[in-house]
Length: 399
Image (cartoon, rainbow, N blue to C red):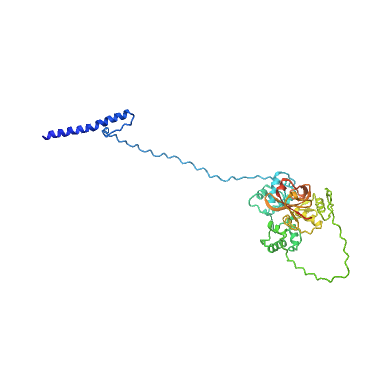
């Protein structure tokens, strides 16, 4: 076979083979399409390659302006506008003023009231001393701003100060043997030396400044006297006399009064019992409240109790209400429902758990006490909301 025929034969065979492959595939494509199948494109369909897709140039990202940061929030500052307060003003602002003065120790603890009395003015003057301003007892707006600030100084008295609190402190230091100068209410060099000596002997900070902590110790049974007491010599036993002693007739113990009413005003009957204590206390109603005073014309709360007990022959020292509350010689009563006439009632304040006020129970839910918020000795309810929630305990002096 010639070369030309061989080429022709090979070409024919190749064509037949190609035809044999393509024809069944073609029909299967048509059949698949007729039955809803997805057509499969074979290589022979890709005779002309698809044009190359020219990628579109990427757009430069638009510069979105970043949000302006919000200014940092600062804590809200509350600005209080105080109104000047003075003697005889009557408002809720006075109640707030008294509460703060009590909290800082310048005004003795009590249920705050709305009347700006002399006791309030005296407490304001004590605080003004710490500011080195005029001690006129007027609560100006500037003074109140300082009083209600976080850096307000708690009660203190120092050299150069004067007031009823200094007078009372000198009196107590004199009783303990530390102060030998004139009791005049002025905090001079001699008073400072006495305070220093008291602080040293009692393990307190020796700075010559009389603080509320020093005051708590000074009016407590824990206070150490300047000179340690000398032990009393044992008495020498005397030989017994052969002559029999005639016993002295003992006077009968006075009976408590049966009536519910007691004398009001200057007169009283100190019978040495419950009725006597209530009689003396009732006679003091209306007398002025003065911090540290113990009668006979002016009182603070513990000073009134001291005066009533001492006048009725009870052996008692001048102490604070907190110290009287700890006197184990007197029977402790834990519930207000169990108190009886003549019992001493002890209270704390809303801001402290420490006993800070004392009153004398007179029965019928009433008590007599020297009130700093009222500025005088008063008879009032012992079962109001304030006193009920702040009742700590009672002590029974008689029986």
